[in-house]
Image (cartoon, rainbow, N blue to C red):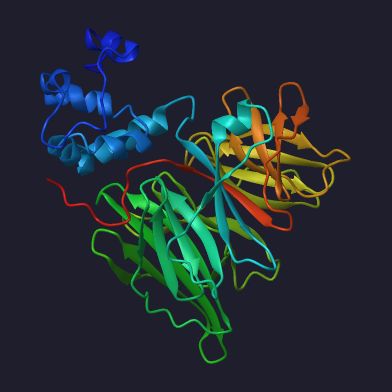
Amino acid sequence: MSIISHSLKPLFLTGQIKFSASTSMAHESESVSLLPPEIVSEILVRLPVKSLLRMRCVSKSWLFLISTRQFIKAHLKFSTNKQDFANDILLLSGSSYEYSLRFYTCSLYAIMYQESPHLPDDLHFPCKDPLVDCNFVGSCDGLLCISSGVRDLFLWNPSIRKSKKLPFSGSNVDCSSYLAYGIGYNKCQDDYKVVQVMGSSHSEYGFQNECRVYSVRTNSWEMIQEYPGVIFCNDPAKFVNGRLHWIATRVSDKNDSWFISSLNLVDETYKNVALPDLVSGNFDWELGILGGNLCVFCDYYKVRMDVWVMKAYGLVESWTKVASIPYFTAIEHSPFPVFISHNDEILLQHGSSLLIYNSTHNTFKHPQVQIHHGYEIQFSLYTKSLVSPHFVEEV
């Protein structure tokens, strides 16, 4: 049970204990200095990232506390367990013929429950070369991974305004190559990892994969074993249950059938994940994440989209069809689920706009997001966090 849940909680909730970011670094307010450190930590861990960045100026002891790995992990755990998804941010990454990739953000809560129109905030990616195309290649715990051209990769946490250019991976990319990426967390090593898969076809050696893994802890790349004879889809990998997941096919498969391939970030082994029992017919499918679970979105074009969720990871019998989204006249593009709420409302990307489908009442609504016309927008989610792209030493 939380130690803030008894006598201190009424004071905290009613504002009788207040924290001032203007307090001198040398002087803590009297009410705060009388509190035990564990109580202070219990209070601070409940604050949003923006407030915590200000709270670092209250005192040296608070700056030290908020900067520790232990506090960062506790704050992330508390944020991701909140049911109101107040720390979940909708990321809009868009480009046009005139401009390279730009980033915008909207509150997920506002999109789901507040009236339109929504004016997104403009994010300024600090490492962008205007002459080089950038691509969003995934996120994990508030860290965004951005590729710039075929050589450069960046980790960026816009919530704390920190970024880092990764060292060159060593991959020699040419016109016969493709790149697939993923970002995830190795819980055993307490380390964030970026995975780069480079596949290439050469007449002398046939098709080959090279798989490299970057470690935030060591700030270096290492080559790991490849998955021989497999071509990975170059969509960003989905990180679930300690594994990165791609759609893949075998080079030798003349039927061009696709399956789910996963890479365990702890032991760096590959494993296939069984698909749900999909109804036969003319359809395409994609991978996604909803509510922290691996999902398959099966698109029977111009008919419906079935949403499958693996509710118990690794158990094929746990695949559950949670919704069957019908097409209607106004739907011109294949809808792509981005988020599912506890009351079965599904946020969908529809081209460069959004739809919210209520599976209980079989109704749609169309939240308006004001963005520049002509932009091709991709929508994804990330969580506001204190996680740094630079390794933070434990104390």
